[in-house]
Each structure stands twice: as C-alpha cells, then as structure tokens.
Image (cartoon, rainbow, N blue to C red; front, side, top):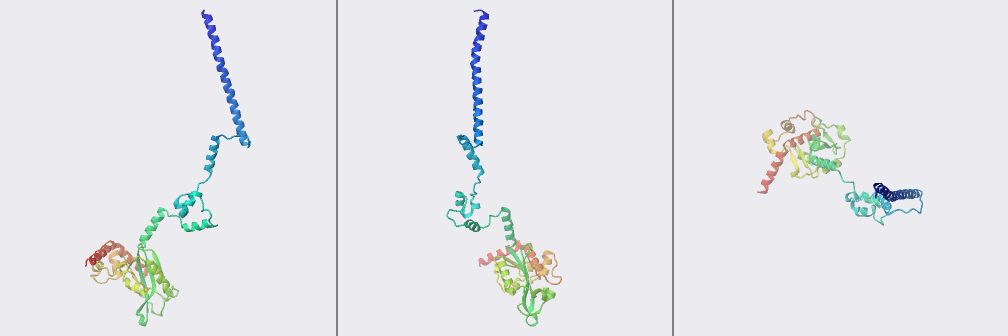
Length: 305
C-alpha cells in the first residue's frame, strides 16, 4: 500500500472514531439541558405549591434542620430552672396538671436569681465592715439635781466609720438637766425623738452577733438596758496595755486616747456621739492586731488554770 493510500485510510479511521464521541457529547449536553429544565420545573412547582412535586430525602432533611434552628430550645440549666429543672428539661414549662398561675408561684418560690461574682464580693466586704461596730450614747440628767442618766441620743458606726444608726430618743421622764455643754442635747432635739423601745430594739438587732467597740461602753449598755456578751466587747477604757502606755495604768479619757493614738483632737466643745464612736473605732483599728492577740493569750492562760 502506497503512502497516499495509507494516509487516506488513516483519515477514514479518524472520522469513524471522532463521530461517536461527538454524538456522545451532543447526547450528554442534551441530557444535561433536559435535567436542568426538569429541575427548574420542579423548583417552580415547589414555589407555586404544586402538590405533584416530590421532595427528595436530602431536601426534606435540610428543611427539618432549618426548622429546628428556628425553634428556641428551653433553658435546661439547673440553676436557671430552680427546683423544677427536670420539668423544664423535658417540656420546657410547668409540669402537666399544674394549676393556672402555678408557673408564677414557682418563680416566686425559686427566689431571686443567683448573684454575680462582683455582687458576692461586695456583700462579703460589707459583712466584714459591719462585723465590728462602735457605739456611743449621749445622756441627760433626770431625778434630783439631774444625777441619774437617761438616754437622749445613740449612734452606731461600722469599722470604716459609716453611720448605721443615729437617733434621738424621746424622754421617758422629766429632764432636770440637759447637760448641753457636754451632751450637746437641747429640748427640741429629744422632743420629737423616737420611742425608747423602738430605738432599743434597733440597737439590739444591729449588735446581735457583732463585736462591740466603745469607750466606757458599760455605761452605754446600762442606759440602753441591754446586754452584750463580754467576750464580744472591746472597751478602749479597759484595755490594760493601752492604759499603761497612755495614762500610767489609770483610766484615760477618750479625748486623751484619741490624741495619743490617732493624733486627732476631739471634744473641743459639745460632745457628738457620732464623732466619739468613730474615735473609739479608730483607736481599735490602730491596735486591733495586738488587742486580739492579747485576748487570745489571756483566754489561753485561763484555760490552763
């Protein structure tokens, strides 16, 4: 076979091979177009609500997932749900058969929401400040020549000097000596004061379970007609190491102690019960560590005798 014949035979074979491929490509394109047209028709039928449309399992699964995302799941946290957390986890609401309005009742029983960390810290610091309280009272004279004491004003401050109570007390007897130059009390101050029993109850409530600081505090306790545990009292007039240091073992005045320990001058004129209570607390704060060690050592010695 000559070269020209071989070339002609090669061209014929190539034409036979290429024709089926082209026919196959055209057929595939036709099928693709037909499929696309069918898909578009199905989508159009879906949008127009054609009941003959059949949703594939994959599309049905996608629709279910989208519906679940749109539904808000109930909070099944035990802390958030309170005592009814099991019912919340199961049904997201009150248990079956509960009476109308029981949901509000359960919310009220669960109490307030839990405090944040910062709120707990503030409450803890507040409790520490209020564990030590200082009290001072101002008195007026009753009876012959005003020799007997009667409560006219009481003030209580916490460890940082914040005033928790400061009230004048209505007189229960005829006042024969207001002692204004010392007490600072005048008739109009106590004329509209509160009843003694009311103030007494407030003082008892504030001092319950607290460490009471004051100067000659037994006099204030006596005029209030209340009691306080001896081991919870810190009397600046009876702390022996301080008395020996300031007044050679004698009972020092609050004015002298304040100047010696704090370097402050008080009681330059009429006394003020708030100022005196703060001064007593300031003295205690300055020597609190040594004072508490002194009490522990004294108690330890008494236990071994």
